[in-house]
Image 1 (cartoon, rainbow, N blue to C red):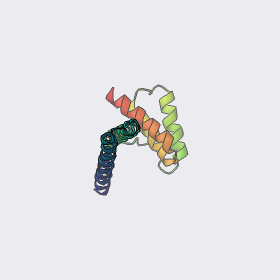
Image 2 (image 1 turned 180 degrees about the vertical axis):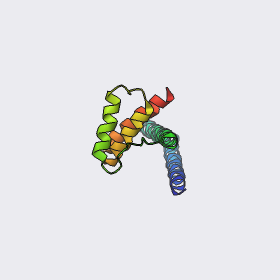
Image 3 (image 1 turned 90 degrees about the horizontal axis):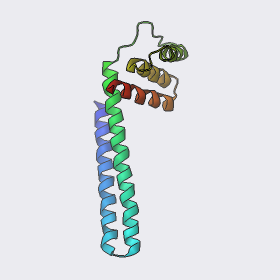
Image 4 (image 1 turned 135 degrees about the vertical axis):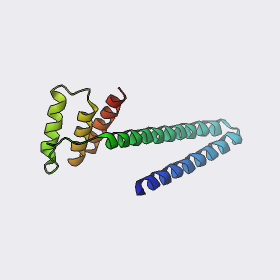
Length: 133
């Protein structure tokens, strides 16, 4: 429950930030000069990027949460040794489970256990894509 409250607070904070950017951009437009229009355009681009990144991260969080609820670890999964789990997950994908979201999510969990956040996000994105089909 704490995570949901935290995410809601972050979304509200981002919405307030976007509203502030919009207000500043509108002030530059009202100035009516070429410089004002240019600054308003730059702020508008920043506003669109803010909204796009927030939306993308929300979809990632929802997708990974959905997979986490559906995922059941394999009985032979070794939670004590993250390197062995990583190798087992990587081998499973290389042996022909490339289109199996379970294998990709298992690899993501192994990356996360090894503290490789970039690899974990990459594998989670692939698992989400494979789950969609």
